[in-house]
Image: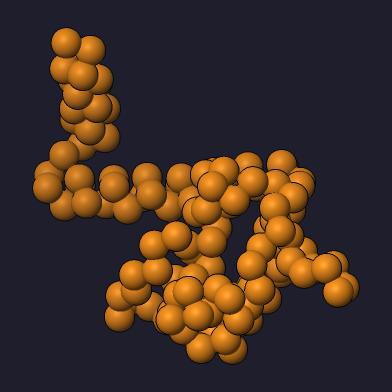
Length: 123
């Protein structure tokens, strides 16, 4: 996992986003046992308390669950995973659309650019 961080937002939020992306993309499959807080904190070079906070956030969102004495696991609830995947996609689309609108493109222009790009890829 890429553990590169920026200064624009708190580290724990970035950890949450990176782990969410790994889950919704299938890199961390449903039911997968996660490394311990200490192991992941050492790998990411962050304080274990920061990693613990990220895990708590993921548990609140239902993407991760704990089993006493067995560790943490990725949820097997595909509905929860798909819901999060769609939420992330909507955010990426909003960000993309905002950037394109700043360039002066309309929604119709953006759709045409995407279609043109797909046609060029086929060639």
